[in-house]
Image 1 (tube, one colour):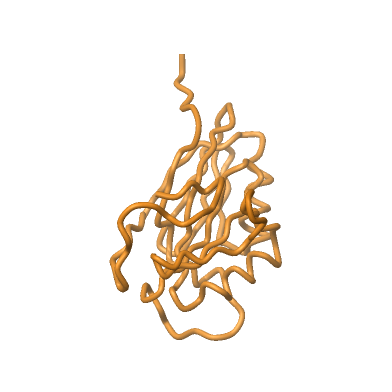
Image 2 (cartoon, rainbow, N blue to C red):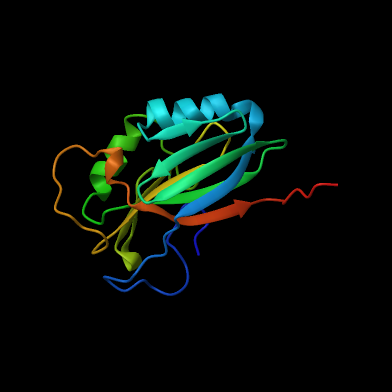
Length: 171
């Protein structure tokens, strides 16, 4: 398992070509209530994803996954990975880099990552709440033969969700 705060080669079992990937239909996470407007702007206006806002939450559509960000106190720290069709990794990374600064590897400064053992390409950014958003493509997964500029409508869904740091429990 790789550490998204220091992107390096993923550890553990290799994903064979054409391997199935885990995807979620609904992901519900806490987000700082004071940042819901900024998160709406980031995901909706900047990235062009479908968003729906209520007073207490924000819903963001990542392909087949609905991400619900529920306003709360504190600043939980998450990592979420959005799956991109395997043949669209380079185009997706270019698309994201045009909108948001990509996070560099602290050792090499590299901002675009190739994981040879997984036949994967990835990049990482922070959203306004500090969540690490990863775009990842795996060769042979969800390839559709699309050409040209990447569209956020091509995102397949969220394939990884993790909580980083201390989990705050209500008193």
